[in-house]
Image: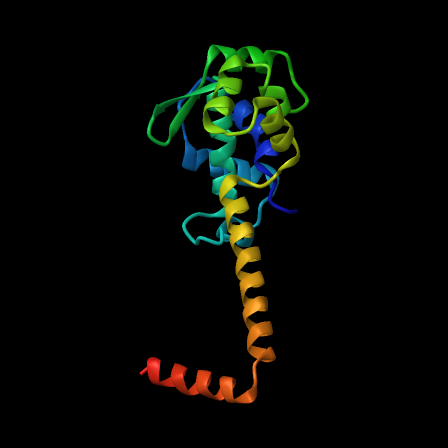
Amino acid sequence: MPIPDYQTLMLPLLKLAGDGKVHPKRDAVNELAVQFGISEEEQKKLLPSGNQTVFSNRVGWARTYLKMAMLISYVQRGQFQITPRGQSVLAKIPPRIDVAYLRQFPEFLEFLKSSRTTTVTEEVQRLETVMETPEELVASGYLKLRQQVEKDLLSRVKSCPPEFFERLVVQSSFDGM
């Protein structure tokens, strides 16, 4: 099973917090991994930055969005708890919680407005279709740019006369010493 996107994780994360207890993020990540049948290999898969696992990152973003909608609160670093609003949402038994669902809460819209240069409506529409976390979007953008630069550079080198290539190789070998 592929690793679920952060929007898919929102409702299960809120349900996990539904017991009213304080939950460490690490425990929530482990419980959700079991719930979604995430394999050991998938749990170890890192973001391109190498600083965090993909699954933990996605749980983290789901948690952040739930907090911005005031469905959970951060008790202390790395720990969260459901709020009365979160309990109320769970009582309605929503089939899914995602960005489209969260836009009913003024605090969530304010969060989007304060953190974006686009209008709230444009941002919500974009977020409803995007399944990657911000870190994943940055990493994929970086990779695309790098591949384009590599392609352009190779094309330029190939279009140069052989003497240029020879000087390039000789100069590179001296610079590398």
